[in-house]
Amino acid sequence: DIDEEIEAEYNILKALSDHPNVVKFYGMFYKKDMKNGDQLWLVLEPFEMPRAIVTTPLNDQKEYL
Image 1 (spheres, rainbow, N blue to C red):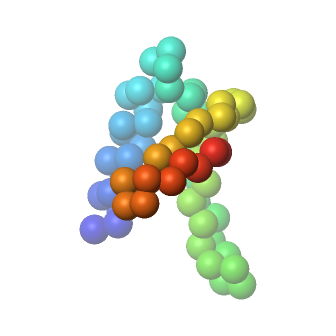
Image 2: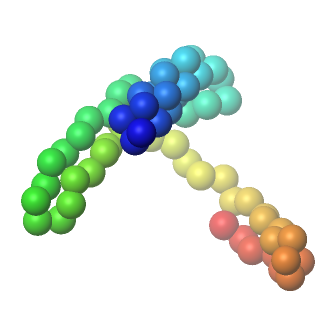
């Protein structure tokens, strides 16, 4: 069930939060919104995404992120 999946993800993020190679996880909250749909928000430390090159196995094209 979805609640168990969310709880499992929360526990994983919380357990790894102090690892030096993992972004710090501060918590999550649920926003009930009838107009736009319910939302689950993760609160993480700000970080810069490094550029990465991803090669897709299907067509061997390189994509720069």
